[in-house]
Image (cartoon, rainbow, N blue to C red; front, side):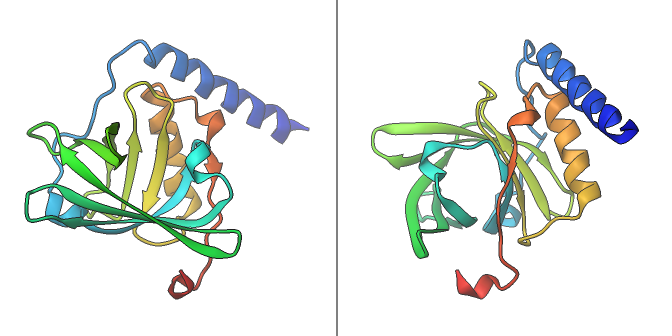
Amino acid sequence: MKKEILATSVVLGLAALALQARSKPLETVKYVELKKYLGTWFEIAAFPQTFEKGCICTSATYGLNTDGSLIVKNRCIRNNKLSVTEGKAFVTDNTNAKLDVQFFWPFKGKYWIIDLARDYSYAVVGHPNRRFLWILSRRPTMDDQTYNELVVRAADKGFDVRNLVKTEQIADVSAI
């Protein structure tokens, strides 16, 4: 019973922090070295979105286009089949932390890197309206301590982390 009360108190406290922080502009990381950011990222948790409905084993791979934009390949398993969506990302500021991502012309979405490990082993990406949030890792799993720290930091930035849903990943990523 005490654990349930403590867990409820923590969730309510995080929600209160999110409400307070939501009135401030969303801050990104100071700088992203794009070459280090390229490669594959596994979705550890995210706010549910219609375009990811039914997906498991979700990942995104970033590469560099000759025009300076980034190629984005999102993959997931949906209905026991591999689903791949390809788009482009465009850096919109000199920190490389703010990008516009486009999967369907003419629509673009904001992709702001709001937390990033020094070794680029994890990243947290959000939208300035705080309705989109992804916790990403270079591996398909993340230890609980790191995950919980990232959740608290996202709440501090005004995200309602009660909406986070962990993404089902499989140990053998070669199956994707």
